[in-house]
Length: 224
Ligand code: CTP
Ligand code: CA
Image (cartoon, rainbow, N blue to C red; front, side, top):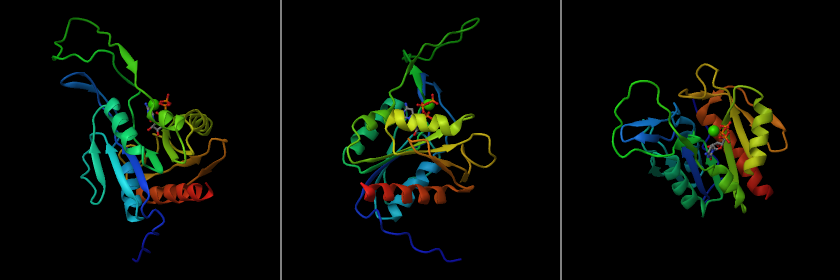
């Protein structure tokens, strides 16, 4: 089966992609996280690389190997993700946030392993910074793309997020569809724009979703 070579429509363009989960440590051996596999972000990074982009991939802990020809930065916490993404994004024309950033971290990360106590415990959590929203506040000419997983009112909520974060579009998916989203090789997403218009894509491989995402980003870049 012959696949046509990818277009070189991102030649020389600096692209930043975030991927995977973050880990928010409670103590040295325990953390709050989520099941993000990193596959979607790695697919975007590889597709952008193949189209000629200079790609920085900032990723939380995942089992995937570093893609060849991509600058990979491995981080654990949301605060580390923020530092790495903001630093790399300074020169970038396109930022794609596929990372499943934990919304909260422990208000106090214990320096030593906490022994169990009798009865219930309460953990005090404090909000993490919203990296995509921070990028949106100093957007410049950059194209900003987010992802969102929703269980209900998806398009409405994703459009609201795109507006709030000043993102050009958000790819919305649902956690309930077999073989997609968390850990799957496929994804079934809806492209949602800040104005609330949307376009549902069929179930596709994550690589094909990456391809269409970059097609849309290139269209937005050239429109200016
Ligand atoms: N995001 C981010 N920083 C955060 C949280 C989310 O940059 N602290 C990015 C994600 O990488 C994603 C987009 O924002 O591209 C939407 O993430 P989502 O969790 O759906 O948005 P939230 O604003 O955290 O809303 P919710 O309350 O639904 O979790
Ligand atoms: Ca969130």
